[in-house]
Amino acid sequence: MLSYRHAFHAGNHADVLKHFIEVQLLRYLAQKDKPFWYIDTHAGAGCYALDSGYATQNAEFESGIARLWNRDDLPAALADYVALVKGINPDGQMKLYPGSPLVAQELLREQDKMRLYELHPSDSELLHENFVGCGTQVLMQNSDGFGALKALLPPPPRRALVLMDPPYEEKQDYQRVVTALGEGLKRFSSGVYAVWYPQLQRNEARQLPQQLKQLPVKSWLNVALTVQGLSDDGFGMYGSGMFILNPPWNLHQVLQEVMPYLVRVLGQDKEAGFALEYQAG
Image 1 (cartoon, rainbow, N blue to C red):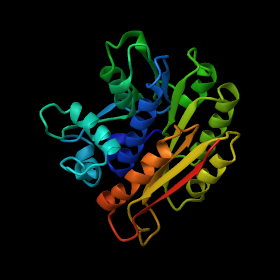
Image 2: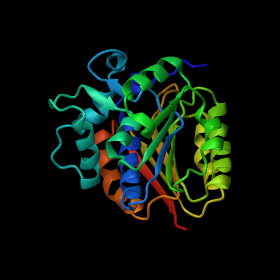
Image 3: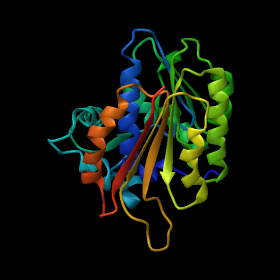
Image 4: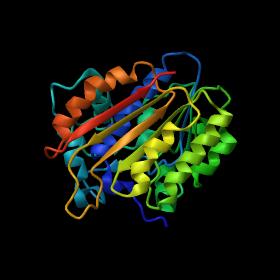
């Protein structure tokens, strides 16, 4: 079932959390001269128009990146992310929003490489169009990123960020995340793994963070941003989270500073809040 298109949700509160943290993880890996790989198991289209097409139907970006666009009080780490998004909009107008691969491309150095996977045929075609001409630094495949990890890990430089951001339109995706991470850690225990997950009422979504805590890794971080209370019918996403295995040592402190700000600016009702858990190795 390949009905999910991220373009409908581009730039929303979940993208803000995910990509802000992605910037922090990539900045951390780039502190050393040694190369690293960025591996995206569900890359999407790579870049999304905010002024036309799918994104305009629900305009979810208006309650996400748009709320940060003109702020002059952004915490430094959050300002870094917003500056990156503005960088792909050189005329100052909020017309494009970068997906995870484009965020990574903006921060990768010459010696680093990207491996991108997208199963949806339409988004895979757009992904290739958005990254045409990148040469061997960026390799893309129209395939299942969960399965691709087995052949990729460990990467030659023994340094990598693996981002898992499945659509979760099938409940089996939750177990696939846990299984793929478990297998990935066996092959590449020192890698940085980041998993985005939705906050939903369904049991699989509520149980996923607890399952991830049971993986054989010494250090992990779990952060969730709740933007609103549950709807009357109990359906719909009311927030999202990021679970990071082998996180940077300073990420917990950065999130302690940024998350209250995100709650204040992106929160939609009095139920807005955040949760932050950290286990050091």
